[in-house]
Amino acid sequence: MSTLVTRPQLVALDVDGTIVDYDNRMSETVRRTLAAVVEAGHHLVVATGRSVGGALETANRLGLTEGCVIASNGAVVVRLDPQAEAGWRVHQVETFDPAPALERMSAVLPTALYMVEDENLDRYASGDFPQGELADMENFTIVPFEELSDLRATRIVLREPNGTSEEFREAVERVGLHGVAYSVGWSNWLDIAPEGVSKAHGLEIVSELLGIPREDTVGAGDGSNDLEMIEWVQHGIVMGQAAEPLKSLASVVTGTVQEDGLATALIDHLGLDVLTDA
Image (tube, rainbow, N blue to C red; front, side, top):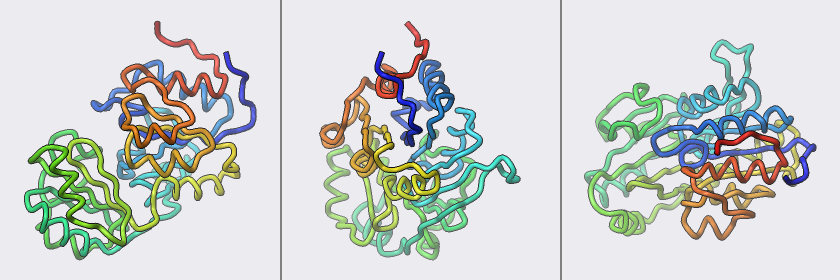
């Protein structure tokens, strides 16, 4: 057992592939471990590419009622507030003009599906995404593709249902996105955020809000949208199924999400006493 860490840590965790598996299942071992993180006095922060609805769904599953949630890859930061009518309040929203990126992407990937989240956190899509791929799926409106360019965006999601992952990555390179931040995810998926915005950007805001210095930060993730976060935190945990570019930045590479790697790494780093499954 490692020495118990008593100074409060900011523990920022990706959701899909880290807290939950790719079918949105959370193991009992991970749930107990994250409860122990909070009980030990640390600040547990959900930091995800999901929109606010999907991010809050995870926070609710973890029983979080105070603190912060980072959504839309850092473009949206909300404060959990049990006194608020919804249980949370928007703290900061970053936006950009999606039109140039949408125009370039549609020229190279004409069969792709697009979703834009606006400054009011409403979501608009050019068509139905594959079942289960957008958290909080019932809360978006389908509109003609051209109308997406008229919005102020916190985030664009592109999903190409055709072709291989290699073909998709080559197409993204041909698009030549400039003036925005973007990350290529699993299943021919592209997340686009305002330039300079990432989960690390959101963490800078949250660390100041919570009064936690950077040397007391922990982050865990598995995807390309976690790169900046893993670079920014003092102790970066990377899941075993992650690609090599992310693993190269890790303080520790843990087991896969199926192996409850998040629980293993947090128990070891924070010195937690948690009864895990055999």
